[in-house]
Image (cartoon, rainbow, N blue to C red; front, side):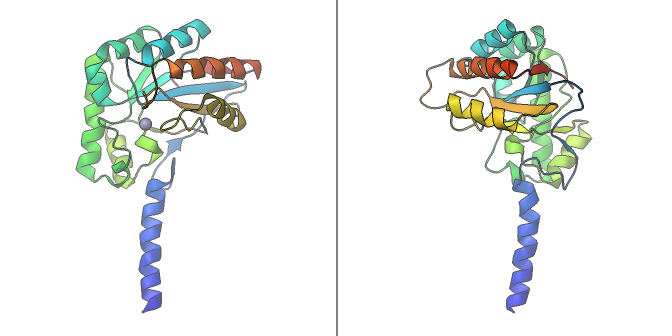
Length: 227
Ligand SMILES: [Zn+2]
């Protein structure tokens, strides 16, 4: 009896683990880097657009001559289409990060929900920018087999990351920079967030980004985009 329970517990565990394991490739490919012979990185910025953070982030990118990929949330893009247009006009790429970014439950999304979330965001990006997204990032990097299937049906490869600032729900500039600096390698994908967190007054994301770009430039890194 115990061994049967243990077996089912093990089976349940094995079914859930790859769904909540960030950037897990058990159910399909997830890009976590790119081939390069130089010290190049791919900068990705998630969870926008937000008028309290995004304009200053774009100002910093322009000032530093860096282009980024923005994985936007469909709902945000519908409310702030002008910010998505500004991203594209300034040479950045706007990609799919689901319609509602239900980070706590998306890992368990059934087929219809997975499809709706991906399609909804693609429509929002197209309405805002006139361009269809070509890439998809799952909220918190968690994707079950239905999510992989829905993304494949939409023609969107999954994009993960290799160096995260862990700044989605907490924002400590020194820690963000240190975490990324420790994790980056040539050909890596850097993950930052541009969401406006409780307690922020506005522009904090841009300040951190500027410090990070200066730090990485001093380490000899440059950025490429739209890979
Ligand atoms: Zn996100």
